[in-house]
Length: 438
Image (cartoon, rainbow, N blue to C red):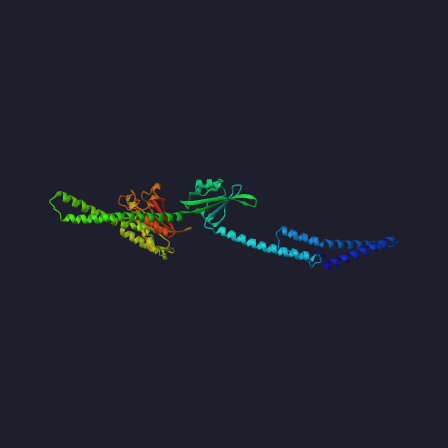
């Protein structure tokens, strides 16, 4: 890399000027009576030296400013080769390097923004924990899920003591646990790992609610089980029913005076009736094994709830029903299947308040929730023990002598098919509160 012509010409000029000034100063010093000339010659020599110094060091100053700009991430500065600083090839190389650096920085900045947006919009909650134990909610899902969380592991105890301990521990194992989210227990999958961030160790914890996924898997397993059981039972029951009917016909023509024949005919007829009744019973239970077909539409919640209230009043005129639904609220779903869910819940609620020793009260409420739309049926009956709150949604489980154990299971199937959840808690005034979240 050589000097450019402009820099070389300037350098020669300043050297010549300095030489002439030095010669003039020497001549003035050797000639008596030229005091003023000596002062002028000395000034010229000093000026020429300063100009030469400035010309030689101009490139160094330009490079220093260039490097300083890099230190502060200022990629807008360019090396000015036209100012007489010289080294044109150097300026071109530095400016080209700066342009490439700026382009790469813009690319990395765009990639970083993409990754940040991707993490922020992930449906899985992400929390980071630094070496000091500081907890940060790293994306939108985490901020929604843990809106009341703090900055330390202990501040998350409201969501579950086990979860708070997991945040404080060093464990990196996958773990399925129960967290209290939005006031109700939910199953979540907790994963964690350790990463290096700018030389510091950081733990990343992900929390994935599995309520909807596990509900879907559980309902599918129950459906398959019921389908297999009803198929096998009907296969075994069909020949029994046929043989019982045939035996009853054969005994119809026998000697009726023989008491044994009468007893046998009575027993066979009873067997035939019970076998046929059991077959009809199992056929009815096959409804549990049919996956609901959802036909989604948008419909006005207020009018829909009013129709349900009129149907309920016709069936249970002795039970007051309070309907609390905003007139402007719109629901998305299958109105007929959701109506069947609400009819079952209202019928169960009416039975519960009849069993209570106080004035009956039943409430149907629909409201906007920050996670969707909530439909609630609240009664002031005896309530449902916490130990039975998961069992009541199982097929054929019932606590009533006249119950079939199908209604709540079908209700759960319909809600899960809508992509929602259904659970039961204690009502604020006592009794049970069924809550559907769509």
